[in-house]
Image (cartoon, rainbow, N blue to C red; front, side):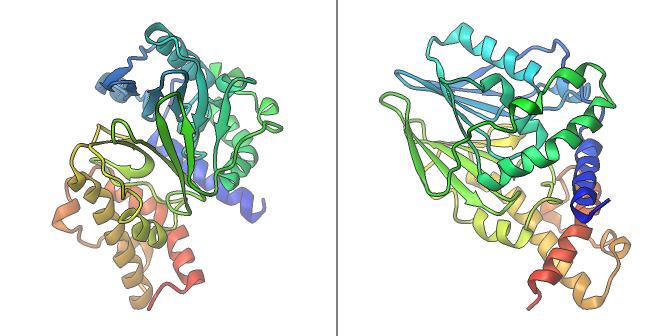
Length: 317
């Protein structure tokens, strides 16, 4: 197994640790919550979380002519149900799908949107990694769910034409302008965020986590930390993170910032003092992040790759 395959396998194992026994084709309800005029969100219920049906948040924005969907969910069966539910409340066809990043819980429903009428936007590096990693991730998922073996067909994705965003892009839904911004390297190789000028709503993907420690195995923590202070620079009143409840106060973004600061400081300390990962796991958590869930396991899963990255990039001053 080469280095890339090992990294893909480690990433897959990490993802499944946090999302065990996914039930991809179950009949759980898809309930869209209207949070503003022309803005709906799907956020998993507490029951779905308890039953391990944990899936990412989804955003939908409606203009006078078209609609835009942010992220596709974890499977074709899920995204089909999402679209069916949305068609019950809106007659505006979906013209745009924005995939914030490649992780399966955000992207594996992409197949439902493949048509001549829908324009799909994704970072070029992330789309390439989706195609190279996806079949292996699918295989691992299939081993936990017989039904899911036919729920995504990567043959339909390999030659898919996707719009790759590099500079800021404005999309018009009909008297409603939407900003799509490529943040570049942060949580992944290329994270996209979406901003609705009319409702002043940000769709942050996994650049922001609420109430739990942000996963960072696939990240560049140093770059992510520097960017999180600058990327949400337009006036906003609502933010939808990739996971967790809606954010209405800018202070909530501090959860992720404080966590990243702790990781950054811990890695630098470990390298300077020569501490092993087992020793880093015993570092004391600062008071401001003690309430975050999944701290220790998230730290354990991400440290090895991040320490290696810090050494390679010479991030230690």
